[in-house]
Image (cartoon, rainbow, N blue to C red; front, side):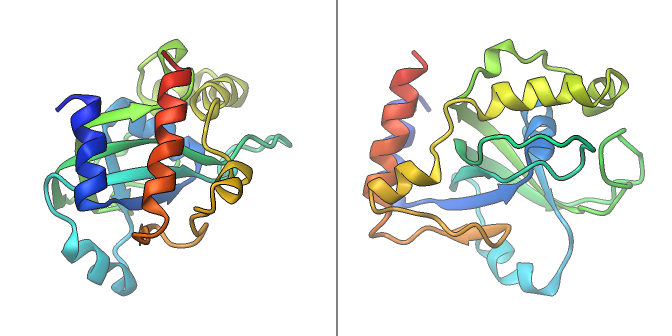
Length: 189
């Protein structure tokens, strides 16, 4: 699916939001996989996710790095679900979480990002961690560069909630969010 088809699908079918820290989005960039902890309150939303669903990616503040740095927060891109499954992930991948803490996995077939992601070396989170927090911070800054900020969302009357790992986006907000997505995609070309 090309980008214009994805945007058309967003207009017709709608889309949801995933929220997480930029460190997890950096890992996602390498794996195209997003994981959730198994919590009872997530199951209703999890059960409704299907192949072909589109999610926007909301990045919050830094969570795992021990640096006194703030980075931009907002929508950093969007993507299309390929499949979902529950996995038993007993092997430690060198990430920020212990093994098997996020067994509910979403796998994406395609993603579009707004930042300077082409400047990010596509390596595992373990490889990034071995290079240190400052190295990770530089990649995070590239990833969140050109994100759709909350100020922009306020100006377009389409502010998303900062709460909830998975959230539906109201039909009223979707057209203006799609306009902002288009603007940010165009500015990256």
